Length: 65
Image: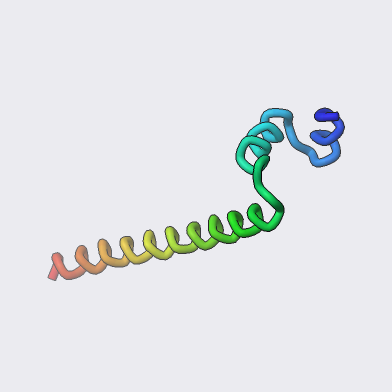
C-alpha cells in the first residue's frame, strides 16, 4: 500500500514518512491552517530580510558621506 501511494503521488518512501510524522495526527483543517501560517511566516521573514538589507545599504551610504 505504501508503494502504491508513493508512486501515485510521485513521492519517495522517506518523504511520505516525513509527511506522516509531521501531519499524521492532524485534521485536514489543521494542516491547512499550518500551511497558511507557514506561508505567512515565510513572507514576514522575507520582509524582515529586505528591511535589514535596506538598513545596511542606508548605513553604508551615510557612512561614505
